[in-house]
Length: 149
Image 1 (cartoon, one colour):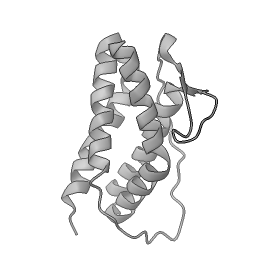
Image 2: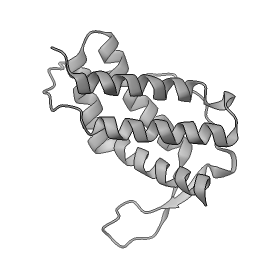
Image 3: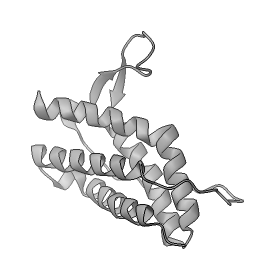
């Protein structure tokens, strides 16, 4: 069974993970531009992931070695958790956002490479809707502010 949208997402996911693996070797504004582009690409491709059922009988291991990323003075930013409820701002962390996205996306890549595409798609879509999609939106908002303000 072949899913074109999943293949497109896989390509974006591989690009994102490669970018993060080499993140500290890129320079300042250039690395932020590449990251913004990659995040927006991931988001737009995730919206088209098909709805599939999970057949997993065991949990997917998330024991990944995470790369080092350094956002210098842009590490911490202010945000609110739920935009439709009045609440005090909290601090967000770009490193936490970027590495949470990395971990969730990489998990799906590993499943895809193990010839478990339906499981990969299910995890990408479920985690996008419940976890890494939130991190992505917050990271993009913070990075947009760094880049254009």
